[in-house]
Length: 74
Length: 288
Image 1: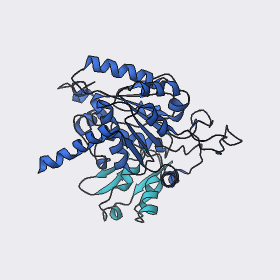
Image 2: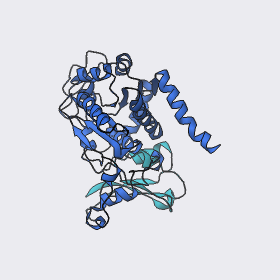
Image 3: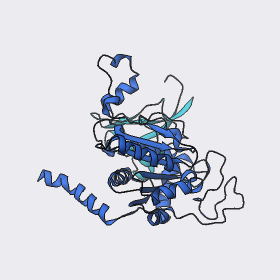
Image 4: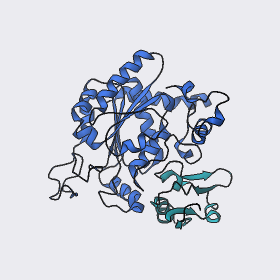
């Protein structure tokens, strides 16, 4: 089991914003879907630092990302 | 080195690792990307073993996205945290002995300008505060005195993070670390003023709170080094382990330090200023 970021797609799609993607320290991890206009997480690469949660919830007050527990293979 | 070495020979695509094929098809080689497009193209740097929430890793991610010509760039690093991510990128990386990065870069840049006189080959040193200002101090300063044409970037985490938290010359005065229990007795070294005095033509200091600004600074430092002389960037990249910053507060800490002592600072000589004015005016003229 490990801790990763998870984007609430329906909430995220309301905003045309990708600030979380621009502040993730991991490359090719928090990605942006061009046509759906949502951020998405490559779970196997996420280290669970929650900087994206700080950007989305504390700075922008949009609350579209939460940290979740996943098991290998999810 | 060069675009022809990066591309896959026709017919061999199916035998190459998927990450590499993605890198050639959707990556930065041969085209300039805007740092705002991060997350929409395959990045040069791959998975690396740096700590969760490390802002040095973040700076390195933005640095690679900002490279003006990744296929014609060589990165030089040394012992320290930064090399863990630098060595995982699709850009040639040379791992110097501790402290000799700028001496290696001097020789390399001179050799490249003899071998490829008609091409721009960029050499960039990225090392920590220990590698550049403590242990590599002499070689760093002398490369600047000699006006070697390459970029030096100091990723300053204000501590020896790999070896258990010893104080470095760049640790702030009074800070208590695991291996500096009495608190640091001396002031933080003013690297920016040293660089200006030693002959750098472009000097900048920043905290990584604005990706667009990091990218602009890195690009300017590399372009100025191509034509004029040594350039230097001093970047604050906190060590969340040794300074006990919870990972989700790392950006908040960078914003706090930006207000205190890492406000954005940029200095360049008159000729470099004229060069950038000319360079940044051209696209508008073309449009008109």
